Image (cartoon, rainbow, N blue to C red; front, side, top):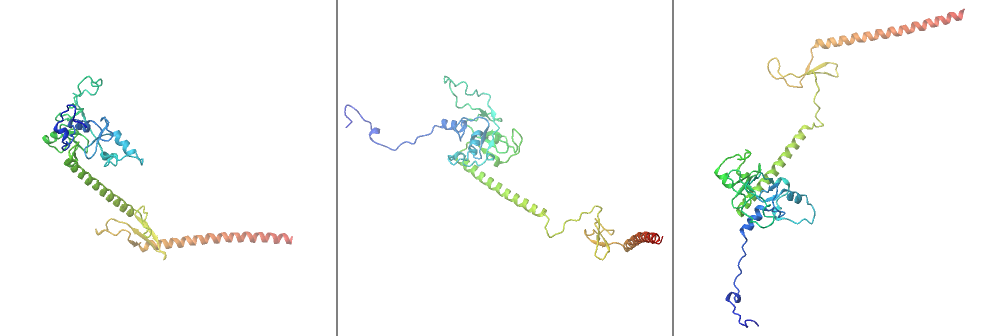
Length: 307
């Protein structure tokens, strides 16, 4: 049944103790977070984007994830908070001049230095390999080390000069505490943007309703010279005068109806009477001429009958 044939078992082989927790290799974890896409698990290549929680992605992978609307789409925890391309920021990275790339280690006969990074901080020169904390600005996408932002305190980006605030600084691949803080900021920012959109829609709707003229109210008068003549049923001529200020200095009310002077009314009545008399005289002369022609024709026919 065992334990025969000269075998000498040891204590740890016979007594089962508590299992040891398997520890994750820190170097492998840093390489996976800083050199590979968090969504597609492929090597990071430009253009590189970062979300509001500080995770690194390939832009192509994010676009494919957003365009995939199939029901069989597998939910990804690393990109569940990304709803549109506006939720990510394209990073403005600075190349490391000492980085030779993957060309030397193709054959596998050379040592692959994992601490050598492709990008560096443009201010201090630290390599972005996970050994140092790095941040990026959400407004412009420029990437700096946290040491550079602490040593050179400014409210303007060191690279492009865009102003920023503390809320715009996002830590890349931070710890759990950093992720919780960034998640709260992200929720507050999205809630604020929703409220602003609702207020803008309400303002535009109110402005559109004010611009549309109501059916009961009369339309505005189209006056060229600023004065409009209105003929009343009684035959009197009235004038609507729009003036900025009266002779006494008091502003006159626009749209006020003032009667024209009586001389103008008398003249207009006299002119109308003269015109009517002229029309009557023309009509009478025309009718008399017709009658004379008819009488002449009758006289000619009577004379011809007698002869």
